[in-house]
Amino acid sequence: GEDVEQSLFLSVREGDSSVINCTYTDSSSTYLYWYKQEPGAGLQLLTYIFSNMDMKQDQRLTVLLNKKDKHLSLRIADTQTGDSAIYFCAEKDSSYKLIFGSGTRLLVRP
Amino acid sequence: KAGVTQTPRYLIKTRGQQVTLSCSPISGHRSVSWYQQTPGQGLQFLFEYFSETQRNKGNFPGRFSGRQFSNSRSEMNVSTLELGDSALYLCASSLETAIRKSNTEAFFGQGTRLTVV
Image (cartoon, rainbow over all chains, first blue to last red; front, side, top):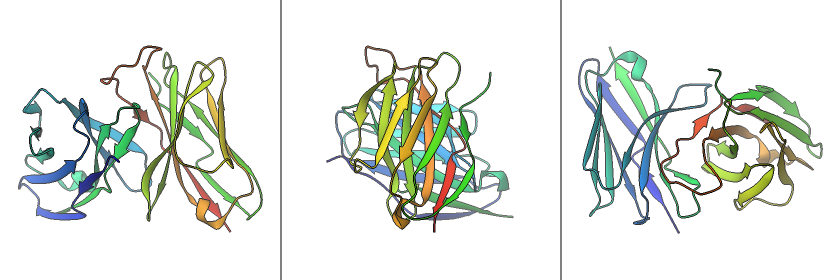
């Protein structure tokens, strides 16, 4: 079945770049998403990328997609303390439901 | 434009009871999906409703059910609650149509945190 994997934890210093990685298994996925979850809150859609794209940039966020390796990454430039949260990547499977990774907890140190 | 609204935000129930959670989607969105989030299992899909019909269902027991009303608002119900049902229940709405498209974005509510004691 489909599976999405992420590393569990990332710690960076304020002002540095953060790179959160994700691998997925469903080669038929056409859209891949990144969501952010702050403590006690729901999921906030950050960005998404279509599978025929290699890269998408949106302000401080850059998404890179390597479809051959089924690898997705989210780069946050100039990371701020307000970026501390859990980040989920997700793919939409063939039945159009979202399959989420386990989430990467990003800690930004001042 | 108002986002997805879930009520209540917090609930405490006793084992064996039943519970109903509510979700009001973004205006104009006809698709509502429900997800369960637990520390052990992560985010798991429960079901999706579109135009008052369940269109997709995850691997949850029959104790979990839902419905959607003509105004697209949705409720989910869990009967005979178990301790393991303690979770954050998230609702998402999207502009999915009768013809599926992969690029529709799902917008999530704040969730209802259910604690079963």
